[in-house]
Length: 103
Image (tube, rainbow, N blue to C red; front, side, top):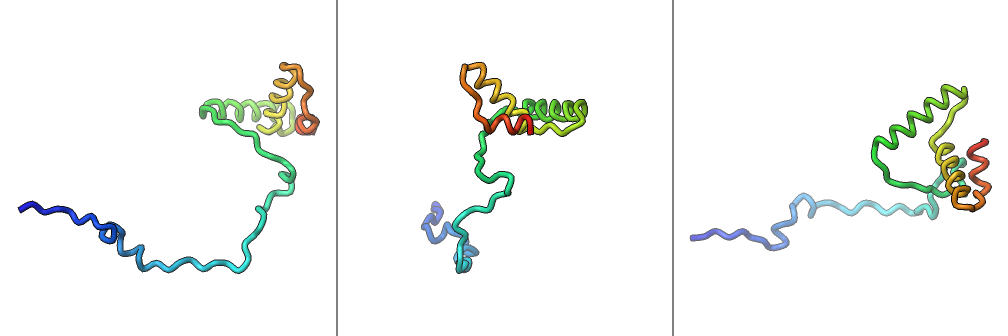
């Protein structure tokens, strides 16, 4: 005699899930996300690169920080790169990039 598995949906759901109560619903839900003040009115521009690219960018930022005696951030490095990219393609860089490079 062959024994067949009981595959009814009720038998497949673990019993521990059946006894869970629904989480309480808070009275007020926030309508907007909280942001850091320095990030107000800004958006993220991102990309996916190999880990060695990230490492090299951070290493160079650290090296420039030591050489110049002032902190050079990845955001400043990316703003400089974007400025160069706009110039290369004959476009005027947005004013927001200038404040990041000189700021």
